[in-house]
Image 1: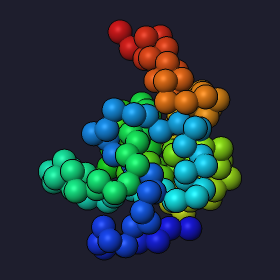
Image 2: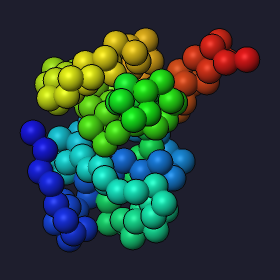
Image 3: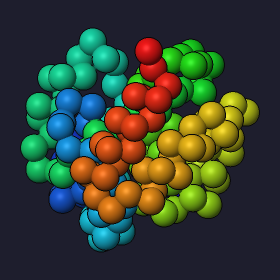
Image 4: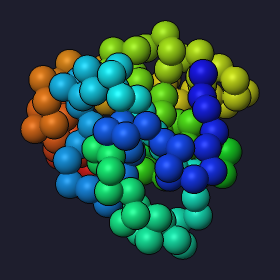
Length: 146
């Protein structure tokens, strides 16, 4: 399901890399690139994250929209997703729900991520592009945050 690599050179060129520092949101419009080139997530300390993502220039960066973590370390914290949650979210948004569920199923807490974020994930998955994803996010935050 996932291949772990230890050097940037091992990542597929042109793949989508989930990057929280990029302005463009991941959306269903990225599905064909995901199929053709792949999807990557970096598992690194947030202390060094900005440096790591600055090196990742040969890939297509996309950030994930607002989602809430279900992992035990950051449970209930917005945007503090584990690497597996990030990968599963992108798969779900791109229309690969079964693969997202299968990936999360490897963790006791994993399936709860989809339950916790179902409304948002479904909304993002129905958006046409990044602009649509951001609109879904904005509408949700406007309705649910004071």
